[in-house]
Image (tube, rainbow, N blue to C red; front, side):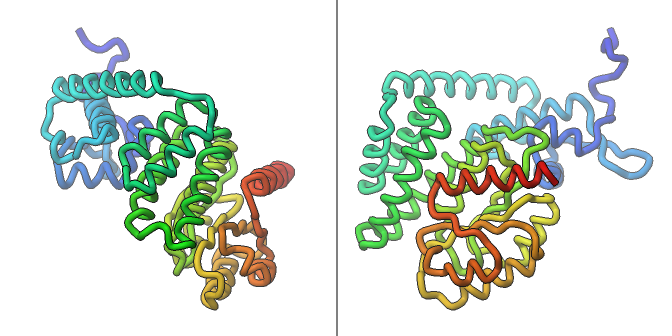
Length: 322
């Protein structure tokens, strides 16, 4: 019996943009998987554009779910549709089991999670740190998680680093775990189609990205569409991404040092790269030391989470009026 919609499941009719939207994979990842692992064999339109079948889309969606669960694409690329379905169901059941395990140890007190997180950082226990943050994400609202766990955790790590109580190993461990949790939090916020865009990162020479990660998650929770660029980015990259995403603002974090003459030059280059009118938000532990440089480019010094929230709300209102 033919499909009720009149199309064969093997008919190549979906362009790559549709496949990317349905599966959550980027067009670049799709092309790499096709070339390197031959996961699907797309057809071609009369104009030479890639076309995919319903079966291709289903297979790619399952591969996305399998890799999101922690599996390597090289290990699952050769699996059949049926094998992938079974594997994804197995992973989903395991995730439910882990969630139930977490829920048995939940508390509604943010300070409980904060203390456990700081202890995990001190003892280099990455597994415990991630488990504690994930439990907090289940037990607390997103704003409470940001304001009462993540913000003081980052501040505590910064204080310990500044006073020589944490080694680079401590910082790298905490950074990796917190990055995963904040990225998960930001991606789950799901801003609406008309949400304003925010480009976030740190200027060239600023390798510490805790502040930028925090801003990304906080803005996403507030309903912004966030494009996170990472640490130590040249001003030209900020400009290119800002134009490509039609962002409403750019946010950068400055952490160390407080007397680096190159910071002022990077801020000037950033303003030149994105143009004279787009709002620039500058925060982080070292930001107050560069107040003159920040004001000289007509940027906004953001001192804390409440200030960030108010500033983003004001920018959003301005963009709506425009």
